[in-house]
Image (cartoon, rainbow over all chains, first blue to last red; front, side, top):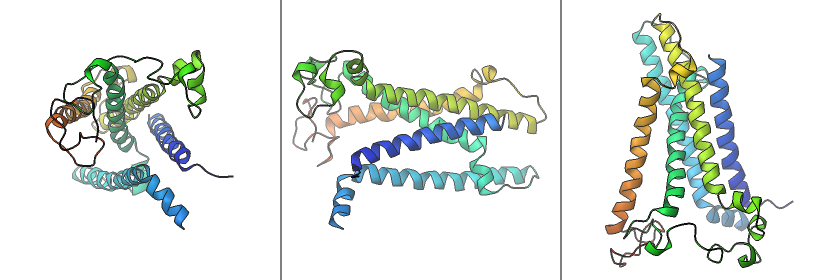
Length: 32
Length: 227
């Protein structure tokens, strides 16, 4: 299946942001 | 090989800024660890390792507070520029185009073209969501980052209080605390200054070839014309 680089860029950025946000919240909750 | 080179060239902005982000984040982690350990040693405590630091609430709050302000900046810029204009700035729309513009100008529904996004082709809920999706996503990331900042900042603040042999405070007390608002506003002020100066400087200054600038010879009073 052909990967569309523009779509890959969009999904990668979104994935980095969402996983970063989840990471911050998990760390914050775990250290409470 | 030429296919790969073409992909790299056509996605240069996304790749370059993604790489810069990762490099700066790693740099922040190393410098942050060194500073954190200096502080521990000055208090006569043992230092911690890299992994322990990047999974600490101190690191999380430092990253999250910068994220929220950047996404607030872009959210406000995207939505404010619909309604507010600045004479002479390439960042502004022409003075007579304030507002959300006509369906024809926006290529909506019966004015859509063959390659228009599917959600732009028919009226209804999907269109109203899609027509605001950039602002919505940037705004949601801002709110989520700000929430994450408050949660990680709350933990980091309580760790500090415990180190000083003081009792912890609740999250609701933290979000009205000086620590939370000092972290928040120190980031906001710099974003607002940078956006305001970009708008105003781009009236009189030029960057040849940049789409963020007017063409070098474009008059100062021209509004809404990009390189």
